[in-house]
Figure 1 (tube, one colour):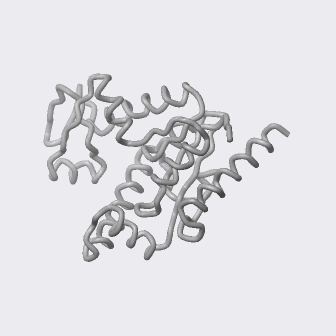
Figure 2 (cartoon, one colour):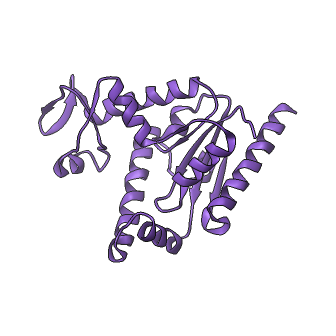
Length: 211
């Protein structure tokens, strides 16, 4: 199956959205880009990968991630680079990486607010993957190694971080159906079944555009 689309995948924590994105990219025969790839690409551009202190993460509203610009300074307890908050510097960096990747042609990009970053792309197909709470909790315990007693906490906390990040940089609500071309429940169809449904939707979408 071939496609001319740039596919972005946003997902609830534990919904299997990352795996779905990987399998979809394999099905389509296109590159797959995720947080790890973006971090590796950022290092090539002079960005170092460092762990933030917990207090710094709290100060930024749980939106500080693992990338930290080299030679940054700290003013008034808020990380800055040339008087610009580190979080904004990091977002600009990742946004440029995502735009550059999209320019190379069809691909699948998971997370990182890619749907909003690429909102001007004519061939954008944005997806949101959700799942029921029990399925998500089971997945993060069995697949991610999170203790059963901590699963619910991780579920709520990670989704909150993603929602805050998305709202801050897009001014839209994360997960709201109107913000995506397709929203799908992976706990209804399973991982492979969800990939099948998305692949069919992509085919129908491209046929409609050609009509």
